[in-house]
Amino acid sequence: MELDQLTAVSPLDGRYGNKTRSLRAIVSEYGLIRFRVTIEVEWLIFLAAHAKLPELAKLKSPQIAQLRTWLENFTITQAQQVKHLEASTNHDVKAVEYLIKQFIRDSKDPQLVECLEFVHFACTSEDINNLAHGLMLRSALNDVMLPELLQLRAHIAELAKRTVAEPMLARTHGQTASPTTVGKELANVVARLDRQLQQLKAQPLLGKINGAVGNFNAHSAAYPNLDWPSLSKQFVSELGLTWNPMTTQIEPHDYMAELFQNLGRINTVLIDFDRDIWSYISIGYFKQRAIAGETGSSTMPHKVNPIDFENSEGNLGLANAVLHHLAEKLPISRWQRDLTDSTVLRNLGTGLAYSLIAYQATIKGLGKLELNQTAIASDLDQAWEVLGEAAQTVMRQMGTKDPYEVIKAQTRGQTIDAQGWQSLIGSLDLPESTKLTLTSLTPKDYVGLAEALAIAHLEQS
Image 1 (cartoon, helix red, strand yellow):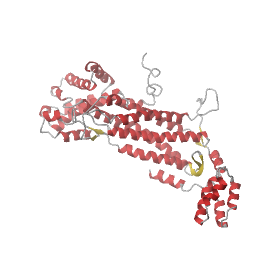
Image 2 (cartoon, rainbow, N blue to C red):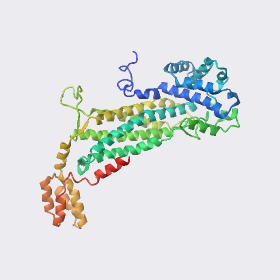
Image 3 (tube, helix red, strand yellow):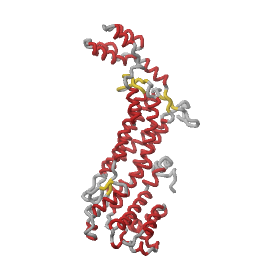
Image 4 (tube, helix red, strand yellow):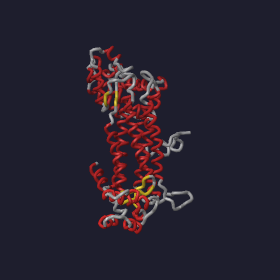
């Protein structure tokens, strides 16, 4: 059966293919091959420009331009040629080397042809792979993941600003608790995301190019007088990656573990957010705008289900399952190298893609939300018992004996309305001025510094 959206084994390329399209050129096998070709070509150019090897003296600007033009126009057809070569070599990186050499031969440029054996010079496959994966991650993060996350963060922050002064009954352990504001609770999520996003932006992406076991063995055998560590650092840095000077055959992937754990924490914050919004929709604090043509239930016509937040939660869980496995597995390699990381890294895009689907779903869900001020106000007006905290705290200030126990006896497990609150305060042995202060309180006004705290974070970020 031919590959089609309906026949794809993974929903990432099937049902959700239109949502993950922006990652295809980056984290697909085509993307990996393209990044490998990039490293191979740039290493050849770098050796000619900076190592000043006598044998590469004839590689000049026209040849460099020819190589880079070919690189910039690298196509699916050329990637397929690599796969054809791999069928014979049974080695994916060697196939890339052979493709580049074939291009050089076909160019019939004598200066380029003389450089033929400096393609993949002194490299082990992992010199190419680790740098290709570094470029892949950098592109995926900067071009796709971070923009989507920042858009999601902006949507939550905007909703927080609009609702920053809207009082809301808080619930701790699912029970009525001291009031807050809608915007303050949303600003809490923004603050959590900001901390994780700051770490994500600062995450170094490491790379190495130091040979078969990380010691520049072959490099030193061929050119013992060159400062290969300095050249290696310069090359990796010019790629936009951070040089790792101490490795085995592989870059040990510790930075990848840090990165994937960071993304996993962001996803966990969003799972928490999705569940909270789902719950607020359930109790009527938010309504969802009905979209014309959509159906909420195959049998119950009235339903507008919170499917976007459910979709997001489910995909975030799948993303974290992959990301956590990558983070736990990749830093482990037997002795100087084994191949288990290679097969696992082919799923790098899977964790990112499920995350991306989830971010888009949450953004879509946020776009449908409408605050139900009537339901929120009704809840507040039926829970005057939450003011008991204020009463016992003021009584402590005044030196009343056992104030907590006094209020507890009259409020614990009970629902109190406005009249009940007036009666409770009236029964206390307090100065009339204090009673007046307490009876002037209402649940909707008892929000402390919620609004100010939210505004402070939203404005500074």
